[in-house]
Image (cartoon, rainbow over all chains, first blue to last red; front, side, top):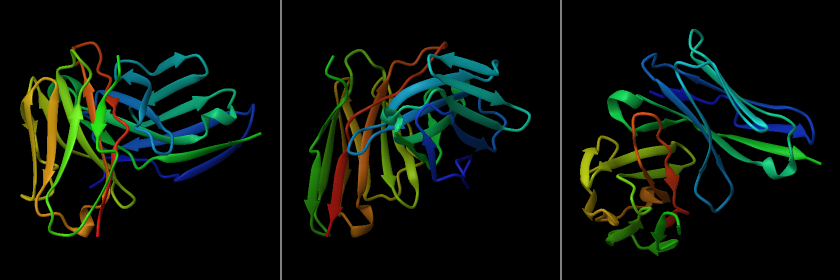
Length: 114
Length: 115
């Protein structure tokens, strides 16, 4: 069973526009969510996170929104840049109970076109 | 800091051979994770250690897989015997978990090909 799902395998956006990547989860006990970015031939790198007590976290061009009732989170990138082209993974954890164990989605490949 | 170091970066072996993947976590981190990435299953957690002790190995696919962490600065993932379906990219990650946050830092991965 896949507890964290990214239903869009790919997304193409024009430079300067907003990119919205979506993620759904099934376990209502998840209390910590993260987004990772991955370039080819490299390991994933941490981008931004959010605790379940919040509904929004912002860091520069990146904002993560959490809708607990819908079990849905999204990553907004504004404005999108060609260097943002990568695979984005969302991840969830039972942070306070299992400290550190992350469940990843399948990833969404973002392509930002000049 | 050099980040998480993994070796080798690429490994090609024949079915039935033993494969050992190595990982050096970031100094001072107290948790270490082994992941496998495949097209079919995405990024899946195999096992993780906290303070060198295995906490959860429920993701280890079979008895052919084993992992050790003899000290805070070194871990191995061993596959014996290897099979073609083990071909994947294996990532090691480390973190310093505390009650306020947890960020895992990934190594560059080992691309394993079993012929």
